[in-house]
Image (tube, rainbow, N blue to C red; front, side, top):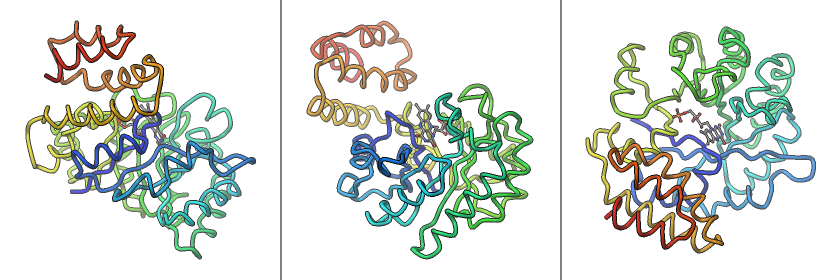
Length: 312
Ligand SMILES: Cc1cc2nc3c(=O)[nH]c(=O)nc-3n(C[C@H](O)[C@H](O)[C@H](O)COP(=O)(O)O)c2cc1C
């Protein structure tokens, strides 16, 4: 079974990807958070650092591009190809207000004619250098029934993988996923399919496969894997337990890296708090300790809670 790490902007950057792959591994593809090319440059220095092969050593990483302009996509793709990437993902799912207002991410989905022209351009370009382009999409912007036309459109291009997050833009990341639309994709998509959304535990995966009468392979894990980094090992059948020793190693690796590159303490703690907002599900009964982490203003206070109460 293949497992992909979802791109999560602000979380799954190269620091996280390297730490995770060293300590856990068992991820078949790491999708990097999006690059948003502009007229000025195909990527910012920070985006370039994140996808720089030197910072992604030994990891199978797929960079992702967010744009509605084929010229900007192609500029960024050329640069990524020069770095050695042969597989690139297109973001058609981002629900953020500022992104959608510019017609990008999920905001591109209702513009079906422009989308077709865009896909025409980027797939025509990709043929010669031999770049594979996958698409990560939602079902639609306003209505999930938009998905029927979208599948027809995607079917006319050599989409290397169609990663479906079965929600519409207005769902953001909340509520149940609309699994019946993924069932439609299973019947009608020409592209190999990847399911993404709300897999937090092995039972979620099992329920999904029972409902869809199909072993979903590959699957893409986002928040579920951040919350329980052992989830990939669990789905692959290597363990049934969350490994807290590995979690401590992941924590320490990330914390020490952040301490090296960030200051003052509050900036480091901001990053750690975000991670604990996911990890806290593993520490039921420790709500007071989690609150102390959220309130900590100094690394010393933070370390006192983490090393004396949580990851002892
Ligand atoms: C904080 C955050 C950042 C995200 N950043 C990206 C991104 O850069 N590119 C993208 O395609 N999806 C992004 N997503 C969406 C995730 O990749 C994924 O599709 C979503 O979380 C649903 O999967 P899950 O239920 O397994 O988390 C982001 C989601 C969150 C919560």
